[in-house]
Length: 68
Image 1 (cartoon, helix red, strand yellow):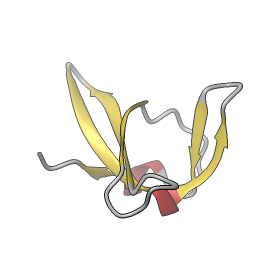
Image 2 (cartoon, rainbow, N blue to C red):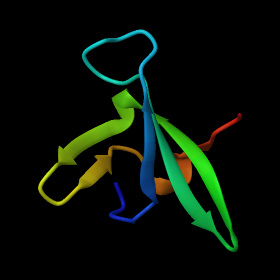
Image 3 (cartoon, rainbow, N blue to C red):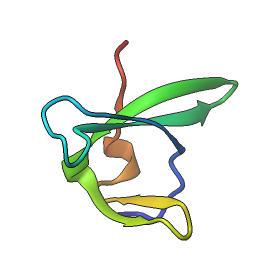
Image 4 (tube, rainbow, N blue to C red):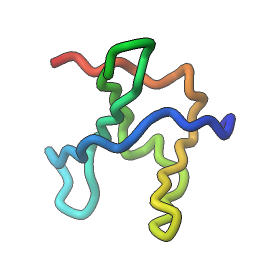
């Protein structure tokens, strides 16, 4: 984890599991465009509901672009 703000949670995707999402979609501002990126639930290290923050266990450069 490098402590960067990588974007806002856009959506959570439930496919195979009912107790936790399979993927989390993140909206990132890249220059003038908003783009969607995706991380798996396994890549989430911690959730802080009080601060409304999700901390990832991967480097920000490892976040993958979402393919629509």
